Length: 179
Image (cartoon, rainbow, N blue to C red; front, side, top):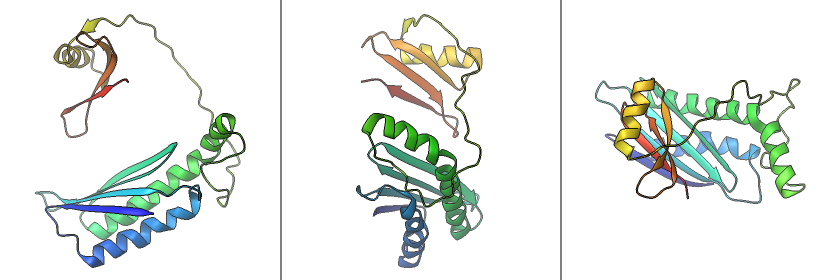
């Protein structure tokens, strides 16, 4: 695993770096071994003295991401590793099946985690159809706020591409542009 550990309002000491690498490296046994994983870690101390840790693990065909806030940075790191392991356990069977369908016999996750007895189904419980109206980003944000959703799909009037605006946890907005 290649680590990129960054700190905001905190100095990333060698002790913190070693702790993060030791804890997150435990997840490597669940990942596809033929491709090296990149691990991006952002550690932050907020103004209210809480610590926030964000971890993103990426391999081709796989991105795992989790964030956690706690009063203690080390506890936040522990909670993130637990959260990522739960994500792997929950999605291992589904992701491997889809990947095998596309790539033959390959799998993204290794099989040393016990198989879930009941496999979750990705059932679509509701479908909506609507016409995408060309508009600018600001109008899309206004439309999203008007309907009370956390995201809004629209056609960008300038590029004629399908885009998505979404509301972030920090209250600001994000944009996803299709290529």
